[in-house]
Length: 200
Image (tube, rainbow, N blue to C red; front, side, top):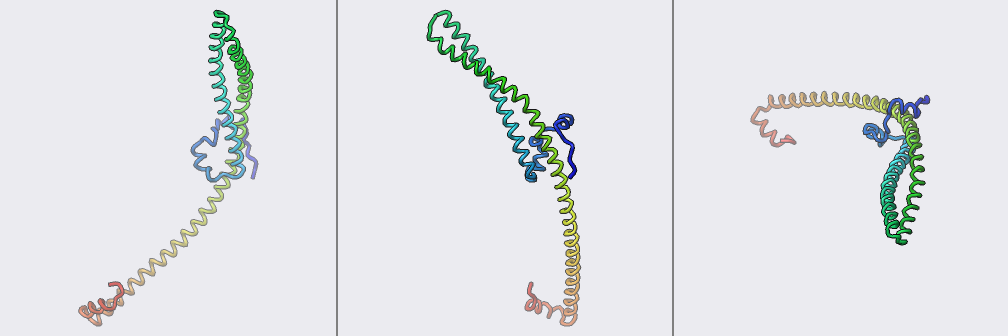
């Protein structure tokens, strides 16, 4: 199959949504993915999950940092006012934790900056594979439609033959009954019907 010119720029330019989040894509391809589509979907899910997890971690660290800043202010104030050395250790612990947070947040931000591009790349690959798979499915369905048409035509012919056979048999039945009725008469026919007919 000819190569399809879809890349990250195409995704941005045409504002293609994340395919695995779109209801129509889910309905059409959930049970009809190719092996390569399944692999790409897995990579895309991992990237999206990573992005969500980093965003969550960043929020929690920023929340924690505010709590620690308030704690440091409080402990510093208490230490200055009371000169109680019991405040030194918790103050140092809080400061160390803030240092760790200050180191971690830029790492998260840096990774979060690279993820949208990686997500768009995987989405572009998935779109390419979706286009390819769509045409495979269209061609498969066209063949199935033709086969089904043939089956419908055969069934229609068989049905018409059966309808004609039924009409012929009903006509023959009427003629046979009419013939016998003419020979033996109505009274005799009632008795014969009672004794001879399978379905009374």
